[in-house]
Each structure stands twice: as C-alpha cells, then as structure tokens.
Length: 203
Image 1 (cartoon, rainbow, N blue to C red):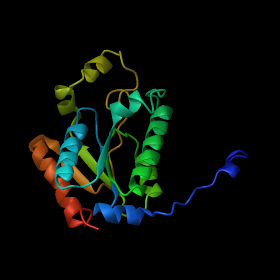
Image 2: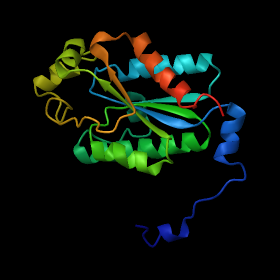
Image 3: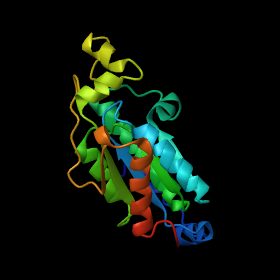
C-alpha cells in the first residue's frame, strides 16, 4: 500500500519498450533463479551457464549473493526478516534487468518458498525460471568451500540455512538439477537445453 509520500511517485513509461530492447539482442528476457543450500553449486553452475550464453552472443548479467551483500544489501543481516528484504531487493533489480531485455542469472540461497513465489508473481508469464540446485545437506557440508558449515555447527554463525534456519524446497521449479551424479558442465547444458527448447535464445 502506498503511503502519503508514495502517492506522488508514479512509474515512468519509457519510449523504448522491453520487447524492442530484447529484439536487438536476439533473445527473450528472463530471470534464471538458482536456489539451493550454501555449497550446493549454485554460483558455479550459474557462472558456467553465463559463460556459455556469452559465447552464444547473448546479453546476460549474473547477480551473486556475496557480491550483492557487499554492496546493495550490505546493511542487511541474516535474520529471517532481512533475508526476506534481501530477496525482495534482488527481485526488483532482476525485474529491471529483464525490462532491459537481458537474461539475468541470480545465485541466492533464497530459502523461503513464499519469497521465491513473490518474485515469480512480479514477472510476466515465462519470465521467471526457477533452477533448483538440489544437493543433500551432507554433501554441502563435505564441500563447505567457505568453512561456513563448520562455523555454524560451532555456533559461530546464527540462523544459518540448513543448520539453524530452514530451507524450503521448491514446489514448482522449471529446472531441477540433482548435483550428486552430474558434472557442472552437464548441469549447465541442462539449463541451456531448456532455454533453447523454450525459445529464450531467439527473438
């Protein structure tokens, strides 16, 4: 709901449309929303997908959880309320990238189903592609590339997803990647195949 101050703020319609921006890029804009536990491989897979799209001369941008928290969202904690706000801001930024005609990739734990669905509902039909990077907790803990699980188990990190804070598995994902028995290259190809099949790589 708009407050009294917000009533003076209106969305400004541009002369150049989203479709026109996408047309000169030769692609259909969308969000590839990679979700999964810390250490699941989200960022690694998203990076390879972006590299492959770049090699196809597609216009992309990758938003990564740590990078965003170092800048745009640096004032937010890891409490449930701030996690919700973190994802809300990412959704709004991603929507602007889509309006620019881009294929935007996001790599965030985004643990709450309601938050992910809220982003989906912000977008037009087909613009939100949820990519569930499904890796068992024990595998993520074995990888533990940043040593975060060890710290969480020692109580040094509060509200850590999978340990002291829940992760709600997606219920309506477009792409489901089970990483235990698949390489990063194969996982990224699965995403590219989906985009090609659904017509996102042409306009």
